[in-house]
Structure formats: C-alpha cells, structure tokens
Image 1 (cartoon, rainbow, N blue to C red):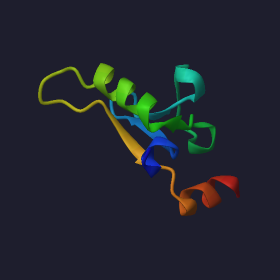
Image 2 (image 1 turned 120 degrees about the vertical axis):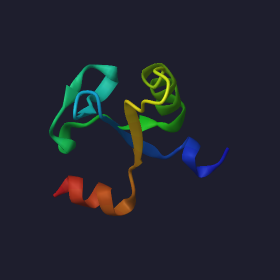
Image 3 (image 1 turned 90 degrees about the vertical axis):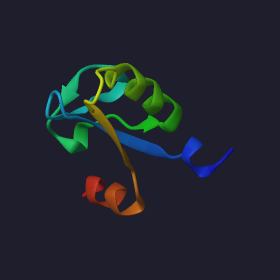
Length: 73
C-alpha cells in the first residue's frame, strides 16, 4: 500500500463549479464543507464523471498538511 491509498483528497467539479460534498451527496461551494475521499473513491468518481471525450469534469486535490491546517482555521 502506498501513501496515496491512505491519504485523503478533495474533488473539484468543473461542471458544477463546486467541491464534492461528503458521502457522494451533492456539491458545496464552501471548501470547509467539502468531502474528504480516499484515493480509490476518487478514481471511481473521476472514471464516472470524466466520461465525455476530451472533457474533464472532475479533478482531485491532495489534502496536504498545509490545506488541512488552513481548513481547520
């Protein structure tokens, strides 16, 4: 198991101009309310959302130490 398998990520939706909410339940503009997903879940979401050829609808953002600290403030 490498680090990405136990690290958390946020998912940005270009289509909805918002973050994925927790538990695959909608979207939020507030990054503090964004869902935190394991890498395997992110890949499932990206594979489902980025189906349109030559169009990227979602992207994953690593939940780095810096981002974690800024979200907690």
